[in-house]
Each structure stands twice: as structure tokens, then as C-alpha cells.
Length: 379
Ligand SMILES: Nc1ncnc2c1ncn2[C@@H]1O[C@H](COP(=O)(O)OP(=O)(O)O)[C@@H](O)[C@H]1O
Ligand SMILES: N[C@@H](CCC(=O)OP(=O)(O)O)C(=O)O
Image (cartoon, rainbow, N blue to C red; front, side, top):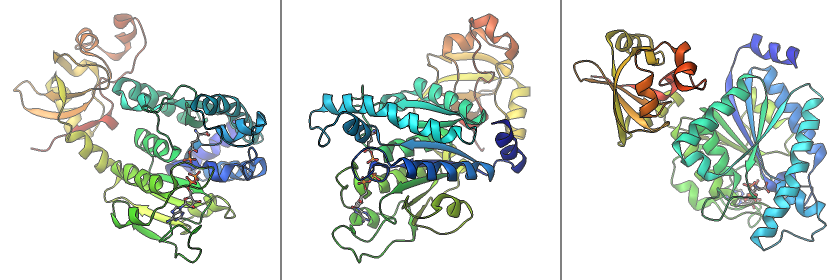
């Protein structure tokens, strides 16, 4: 583990990739998981890490594995039975990844998310800190939807959307969607085997959605959700690649810059896109007043805002909500997602970060607003 990690560190971080493996691909023609294929992808993911790419995995397959383990003939129609199958199958899914990564001494972590976890600002920040922590420690998160508790109104439904939302959450620069086709074709190749492959397009190109048909018998969503996922990923500046997981060495070839599958490119670069999104947030829930030192640091060196530089708090905001940062003259300098609620922020005014634990009774984030969640407004 240590050696593998240090190699990645020496090479330097060359990107953060979110790789999604779909149901259609991961199952052995409907009967449980294709374990040899999983071992192949894991070997490639380890190779990517050695090239300096941080990897996060979203993997489907829980229902398919549960159906096989429980001896069901096909995916049950009843939602509660699908959820039960997912609970059984998720065990096999994570066990398979864990075993495959262990060969290389790499730790994995199971992360199950519902839509609500990412829609609620506070939980969004919690999910973000935990997942970032795992990635920084060199652990590969293996993410799936929490099928057992997700209800129809609250679920992502397909893992393409989940993958894109996690790519947004973690500021991934690349979303790779591995599926059972070579990529996006001009029409569904199951219906029209000669339909040409789209090699590259803008993620927001409206014409793409017209090309997309529904899913195969195992997957959910088909190409339509992959294109919507690409549009979502593009909002935080990530490019999306849709490719076949059956293509030899597909991930390694992509990492070496080869054009494989369909590439859907964003209009803006990651940082600019995220900052634009933050700047445009209309629901500012409160205000932090900064001293001259904090204003200077924010304007000139792009660092995080620490509690020590905050002199006053107003408004009633919660952790994860957008606050405005003003200087003593009342000019707005920045906006960002705050790490503490208004009451906590009040207690932390002018305090050095080492005091946070004794003032709040728990060791929270050292920043009031992390620089990734902060946008400096130009005047
Ligand atoms: N334009 C298209 N290009 C490629 N595949 C398409 C297209 N339209 C529909 N599909 C279908 O989408 C399926 C992949 O989606 P899906 O079954 O949801 O897979 P996954 O489980 O990998 O998400 C393909 O098997 C294919 O039949
Ligand atoms: N969470 C479900 C997967 C949902 C699903 O099939 O999604 P997808 O791979 O996008 O077609 C499972 O693990 O079975």
C-alpha cells in the first residue's frame, strides 16, 4: 500500500477521474457479477493511480448480483424485493472489489448515497469531506446508490446521474462511463447496428439527446441518462467519456490520451465553471465581515478564509449554505459555502483555528470557507 501510494505521489497528481461501471457491463450476461472483468478493470485503475490519477469508482451491479445469489429468475418487479436483492448483492459487489484491489495492497471503502445526501447542503459538505479524505489517504471509494432505503421520489434511479453528481461534488476533471456499447452512436446500435459512433461533441449539444434511446434489459436509463450526466458533469467543468468496458485496456489507453469511445467536452474549465456557479447563487443566507488581513489574503493569494479573519456574522445560515463576505466598508469581496452555521461562526470570530475544538466541542474544519468553495468577486 505505502509503496503504491508513494509512486503516485512522486508522479504528482495528474487529475481526478470518476469511473462509472454500468449494470449492463458488470453482469455476466445477467447471472451475477463478471468477476474476471472486474479484476481487469481494477488492474487498470491501479495503473491509473501509478500514472498519478486519483480514482473514484461508482459501480452498479448490486441488484444483478442479489438476483443471482437469491436464485431469482429475473429482476423482481416489486420495489421492496428489488431493494432486498440490492442489499444481498451489494455484499458480493464490495467483496469482489475489495478482493481485487487487495492484490495490489490498495484499500477500498464502501459508500452508499441517496439523492438527498447530495441535495441537502449540509450532507453535501459532509459527503464531500469524507470522500476527499478517503481519496487523500489513497483509498478507492466504491460508490453505489443506497438502494435499500432510496424511495422512488428520492433516488437517482440510474448510476449515470449519481456518477455525475459525485464528479461535481469532488471536482473530478473526467467522468468515464463504461458501458456495453462502444460509446454514443447516432442511434441505438441494438436497433441499428450500423449507426456511426460519435467521437467527440460538446456536452451541451441538444442534438445528442435525440440520438439516445433507452436501456438494455439490465441497465437503467440507457444513453439518455449518460448524456444528461455529461451535461451535469460539464457544469463543474468535467469532460465525459462514454466507452466500452470490453475494449482492451480502455482506461489505460484513455489515460495515455488515446481517443476511445465518445468524448463529451465542457465549455468551461473546472475551476472557472465551479466559481461561476457559486457566484451565481442567489440565495445568500448571511454575511461574514472580514478584517483587512483576510481581505488581502483572499484577494491576493487565493487562500481559504479562516475564522481568525472574520470580525462579525449576520443572518441565520446553516453549514453548507452560501454566505457573502464583506469588508469593513460593506463592499462584497467574495461568496462561498460556509463550513459552520451562524451560531458556531459567531463563537469562532477572530479565533485561531486551533481553538475550534475547545470552542465548539468538536474538531471541525480549520477553514470558515475552503478556497475550493470560495469565489472572489471582481470589481
Ligand atoms: N444512441 C445510442 N448509442 C449507444 N447505445 C444506445 C443508444 N441509444 C440507446 N442505447 C442503449 O443504451 C444501452 C446502455 O445503457 P444501459 O443499458 O442503461 O447501460 P448501463 O447499465 O451501462 O448504464 C446500450 O446497450 C444501448 O442498447
Ligand atoms: N444501484 C443499482 C444500479 C442502478 C443501475 O442499474 O444503473 P445503471 O448502471 O446506470 O444502469 C445496482 O447496483 O444494482
